[in-house]
Amino acid sequence: MSEDHPDWWKPVGGANSPDSTMERRSTLSNDGGAVLWTSSIPHYRDSKFFSRGCRGLIRRVEVYCQDATPFPGLLGTIDVYLTPIIGMSHLYMAPIALAALAPAAWRAATFNIEWNYDSLQIVLISSHAGMEYAYDVTLPWDRHTHAAHLAPWTPLDSRLWIRVVYAAQTPGDVPISGITNNIEIPARATESIGFTTRTVPAQVAGVDGDNWVRWNGPGTVKLAIWRVISDAALAALSPYVEVDGERVQLVDTGMDDLAAIIDPTADQEGITWPRYDATNHVYTLQMMLDFPFWGGVDVGATNDTLAAQDIEIYALIYTLR
View 1 (cartoon, one colour):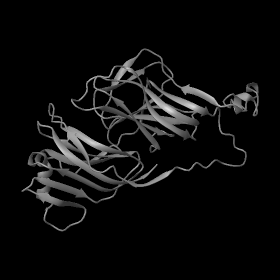
View 2 (cartoon, one colour; view 1 turned 90 degrees about the horizontal axis):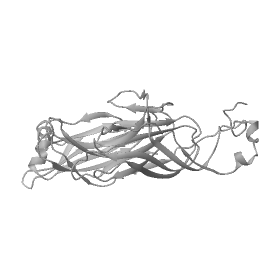
View 3 (cartoon, rainbow, N blue to C red; view 1 turned 135 degrees about the vertical axis):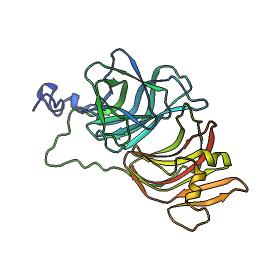
């Protein structure tokens, strides 16, 4: 055996030594160089990868972060995802909330889940630009980013300040003696959080405002509904579905233009208008088309005007977790 097997390598004490049979509580980390800061990009993914020794009860994941330039009126969040292989669909997620202008500090996403994989990728997705993660450029590097639609994961010569706090950590590799471990991925049926109101910020310097509701994958979008209650919002907001970083924009010039393409009075399937009420200024757009996804899906809208607008979003999702 090699020194890569601390459970079973003889100098550690053997298979039945206290080192290999007692519970181990520890923090998995790789950081400590001169602190630098990276600004997050909404929807895109930044990550840290631990290649070995990750099995055990993950109590929480800690991220050294701050909110440097918050959007007015928005509570910042960093969604923390766990996956065993770089680029594989995420199995678990927990959020970290940041108040406006929150100072630099270690903040935790609580999991309390049993992790049965030897490797671990921790992926960060922020709610808006200006939320910053700490990193350094000291070896060994372990950072990977997914920074554009349909782009592959790219290794970077740096490392994010992310730590994993364990109880019941299992040291070393899983010994194979005629029986291979089969790890079942838990499944969850269709879910929805009901109608959720999102305020889509105004356009700034030619960049459309953007807001969304996120679900974590893998799974399939079965139904999505967008509802606005003003003519101004109807003209300003453009619905979309973003699947694994690839955005499908239903229209890019406002929902009113979509009504000119898809007749609100027609009896049709796919994308329809269950309610198009110009008298009471209530407009509901419905999409009944399957959108499978692996890493996650965002259902949202963009705003190409200089005034913020509200939209209500509903989705029915079939997820496997």
